[in-house]
Image (cartoon, rainbow, N blue to C red; front, side, top):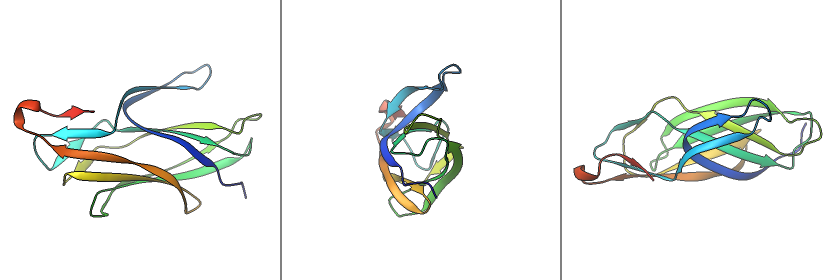
Length: 138
């Protein structure tokens, strides 16, 4: 079994672009908060960038991501497997979430799992704002 990786970075963004030559990501419009005029709302463009370290080169890793709201309701989960390049101990992962229905304001928590072990995560805040401000990604 491969060793447990270390989670170095988690970023929420509107888009991820992967370079075909080097495989590196460009993370577009990073945010940690979504402002909305009304709930429920649907988040259509949610991407997550992960940077992992302390990995075994040439080994396949399976990750699971869960996004839960403040009431611990599961909003969405994704699983993906990837292989660390030979000669490397680090890996970048990009995830595109399907449209997510958000019912309540408050913190939403993304948790990253490897073999049922929590590596870490991040918080995505949803806030209700007056109508004149509209929906914003901040």
